[in-house]
Image 1 (cartoon, rainbow, N blue to C red):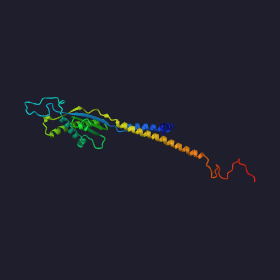
Image 2 (tube, helix red, strand yellow; image 1 turned 90 degrees about the vertical axis):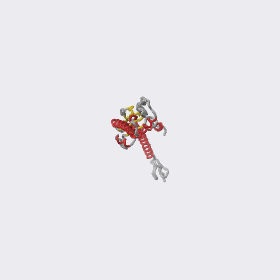
Image 3 (cartoon, helix red, strand yellow; image 1 turned 90 degrees about the horizontal axis):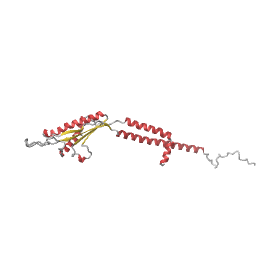
Image 4 (cartoon, helix red, strand yellow; image 1 turned 180 degrees about the vertical axis):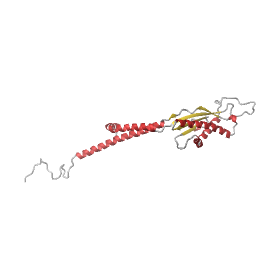
Length: 247
């Protein structure tokens, strides 16, 4: 069946397609409204060295030059950020911030890129969280930011680094205002709409097929059935116009 024949069937069975289409629109709107909401929040940290540098001077009379921490960048910051990211992605940290396995609340800690080769080259720590409420998403990101600060100090203390050389996590972007993630709801509504349109077309063609088969049965029942003697009348029957033969 070509395109115009399909359109003709849909218009001819408008009393089926129109109500089903209205139900489809109502169902898609219901799916969009009732689909669980998800809110997204994020923040960004950057690791910096102290203004006096990352090492102590050998001679206290000649201290290290004072530099701007934001321009004193080396490869060690990227490696330290990568180590911090791995520590924040553990199950223990997830439990501390109230994220349970299989729940709707999730978080992700990265360096802001999806390229694994850049993991140890960027000094950034990007935290993002998804939760069913805006407040929960904001709280998870805020807790992770505080844990990142504490964990960075713990890691350097465990390595025995001098206190004056401790790296710092500067909060470039504080926890943002949570925004609703509408992509999932739109996809669910589009899927419901597509399935509804398919059902609408299926209902129209089902009614069309039933109507054709009904007409075929009626036309077949209206035709006279031939008898065994080749006539349309039963054997031994006479018509009123047929003359009687005399002996």
